[in-house]
Amino acid sequence: MEAFRRDLRLPAALAFLLLLACGKVTYKLPDEFLSDGELLAASMAAAAAEMGENPMLKPENQPFVLERLVGEEEEHAWLYDRFEDVVAAEISSRGLELAPEATEEETVIKYRLVESRIVNAKAEGGRVKRIGRTIAHVRFYGAGGELFWAGEYEGEFENVVPKNVVSKLRDERIEQIGPQLPEAGQNPFVEPLLVTGITGALIYLFAVSASAE
Image 1 (tube, rainbow, N blue to C red):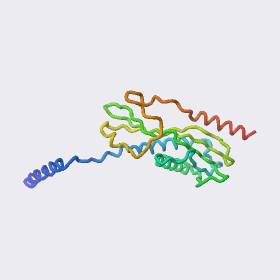
Image 2: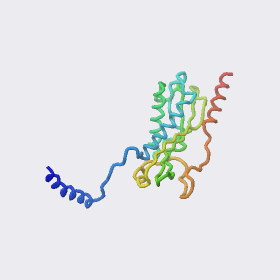
Image 3: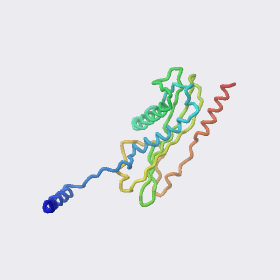
Image 4: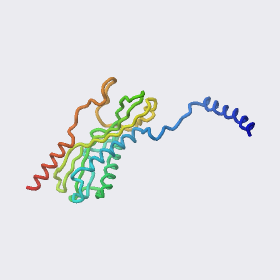
């Protein structure tokens, strides 16, 4: 048996050298190295979970209809379709009903993606922190077309990876939405503040108090 094992060493070594001679060996990236699409989808799910806590999402206000505030842009189609999927899943997970289109009996949820992109930042050990970030402007309209709530929901999901795999995780097919990426040497997180849920809460409270009068 020992002699047989020694005889196998030479063919195994020759096979390894043959692989090297034929070209670069490709290895599958570990599952925890999320691609652009996976990072963005995770950030959308986080934003949808925040939206799920909106006071308008109650059984007495169902069914709900999802509509876009802007026309569909071809390069952003994947982002809008995916966001609608995660929002629909979030609403359904709460036992609430979704309708395919608005008539006059539904609560209409209109939205626009303000930002949906990947931001890279330095991490310890020469690694890169890749952050998927999604910000959606959302409006809730009652059955009569009255605006009851408006504001922004933000979701982030981050993944730290070695610097040398970042290029393999990019997906050039996905056109990202948001401000231009900062130039080299600038802080990627220094951006104008957006009006967020505080404004939306004020609009909601105003609408509720007005309807009670």
